[in-house]
Length: 273
Image (cartoon, rainbow, N blue to C red; front, side, top):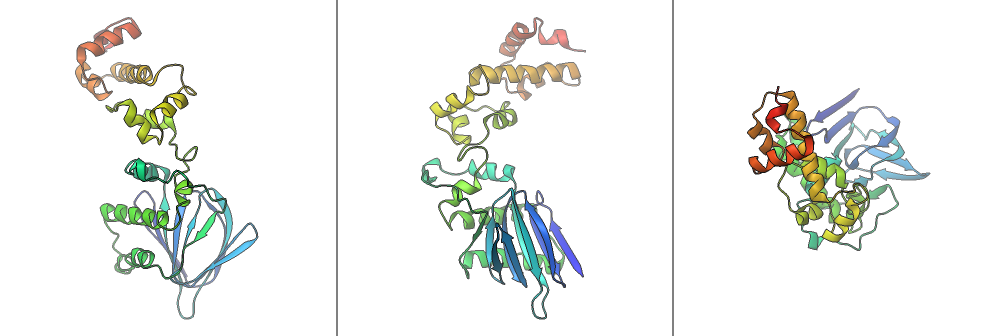
């Protein structure tokens, strides 16, 4: 018999139960923490075998292929609990870190599997706290799950300083993808210094890296992007010009009207349906 329960918080928390041994090929698409509650898990990667037993926990780096063999215990099913960390969740967490406390000397480990020291109280308390929810068939709230996810990240970071570089490997070490960040935040009021900080860069490095994507300065790119968004919303209809102005990030209606006319040759009201 097989049972797989998923508590949906961006699909990050999974518990699985197997009453018979199972084996399968596995491609890990997201950084993962796996904890064995009962039974055993044998992981084979690059011809190296690792066995996780009850109470053991491991960090599995994303984008790796491995072979998993799940074995039931004596009179107990195989039972594991998994936390999967999406890039979006990690980016949000990274932005909360104090830049001065980030270890710049950290280096990304080539290994795809990092087994934590056994009998760690923080690991055991984190994962065992999920068991009552499963037994009751009642998922934790989204708020509790997010707190647990954050607790899991700190468990990783407190294990090995080099795991900073593995966990936050968005594009280049310590760098969030600039254009993805800009696309998601062009409507927000952020200074150049804040944009640099949130993408894991110094101000000078941010400006240099931005030139790889655009001939415009970041400020001019923001204005152009906001104008494009405003143009699309105006042509779509359904909103007042003043609402669109502020929705896309402009703070002054008269300034918006001026730069819009300069860009499109007609005032915003001229493009209304």
